[in-house]
Length: 95
Figure 1 (cartoon, rainbow, N blue to C red):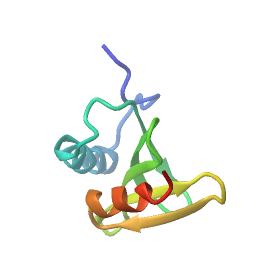
Figure 2 (tube, one colour):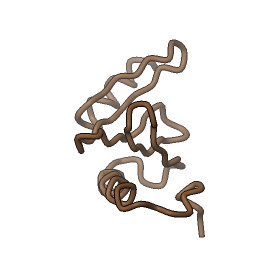
Figure 3 (cartoon, rainbow, N blue to C red):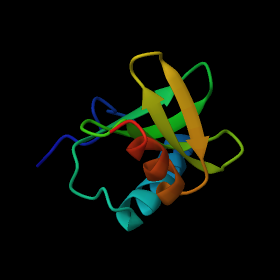
């Protein structure tokens, strides 16, 4: 079995709820079967699923909003989108 929790040996109720929300969005996305990393950003308090082969993550804000976040590795910029489609349109401008 894959260790998809990446080191989460104990999961709090808050983490479980966050990852449940994120996995629900992930399951409906076009990225199912892509390699992922799960995480939590302590500074922003966002939980996220990051894709290893796409400059994109699905993030859950502290308010409970789901955002698709694109990354520009050249300048470190991030852009936040409400939908997967808008995020992918933005990423297509870099190809």
